[in-house]
Length: 127
Image (cartoon, rainbow, N blue to C red; front, side, top):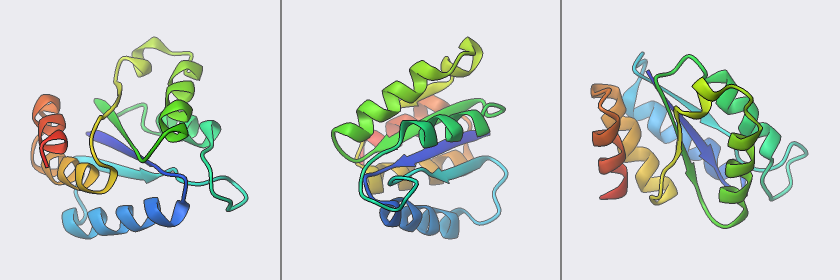
């Protein structure tokens, strides 16, 4: 299974993307998407602990891909990866350099039909 984490400064954005991709892939056992946008109190911003929790909740996935919007969402994701104290998990995690909406959509659809991580990332980066 491929895990996908959506990180944005706005929870509404990541929740909306999750809604869209979940609708597209349905009840697929090959991919799990987590919305990790915004702060815990609903403000705009990112939360490294929320991203860390998302990573740890996907620890049983073969691969974990993180899609970010801008600036500090990438920094918060990098910090979250550094906080993981299990090397077997950190080896699975990759921040994908792709547009948040289109990249996450393409990756989720591809992951629903293939476990080839290189193909999944390629699709996300070439939208």
